[in-house]
Length: 174
Image (spheres, rainbow, N blue to C red):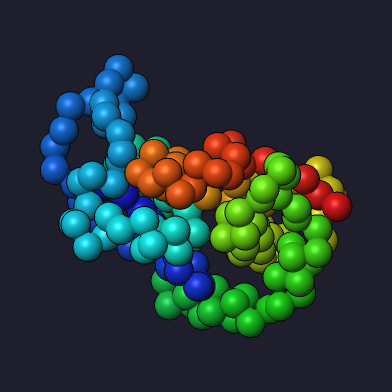
């Protein structure tokens, strides 16, 4: 199962894959990961527009402890909160100003994706709009770069066009 984060705004698409051989860590034994997606979703032009990729094996399996035993947030209220946060542009501007992709030839879409994902994390984790540089980097920038790295690894493997840029995505705060 794959969870793909966004094109434009952050959205999750849930896709299932066929059973395939797994390694000792219960991950698919061969690359590219997207080989299990339908052919029309394997185009690098499409993949490049995805913000991030979270392989399903990194998501904890649901069990009885996964569900609330008492009161909780109603899903439609939580959805309304998320929609309201999309209109908060201060975090977007702050991420655009403060996050810089490192390397000799940074790829613009990588930088834009990391900024957009970091902005989303910031809005969710720090709705009051304040975080130290260390918190911002640890909880927003690093996870955003990790999500984009999943997409970038696939692009780098599939198409030589992307190999003119750095393999590892590294960011810094300015």
